Image 1 (cartoon, helix red, strand yellow):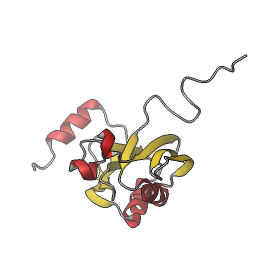
Image 2 (cartoon, helix red, strand yellow):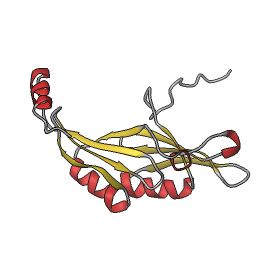
Image 3 (tube, one colour):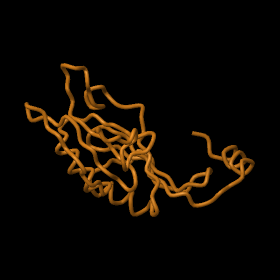
Length: 155
């Protein structure tokens, strides 16, 4: 009798990012160093390209694959950028941000306390993906958030 499988595999949540990169093996090593990723599975195709990898960062999964131009599967470097940000909530935003920068991420927005109650900053990884790192540090009311936003310096 066939065994029933889970519709959502262990370790996954309803939404899980799936990134396409140039040189998936390098990306895996980078994400291990920058974000403490743990490789759960990595499958290569007959040509040696990374077909699929499952990485765990904290309590969440990140899926990853190499580019496949013949299938129009391209990463942000080939597309000229990305409109997507992968967001990480962590216990210590300062330590996580420093680790990512030390590993080779470029700072897009310095880590600082934000009007909505997070210590938050943005990074760009060497593969063209944008990341944000935050720790929630306070629970301002909606009115406090509105006031703080209104009092921000104009850009």
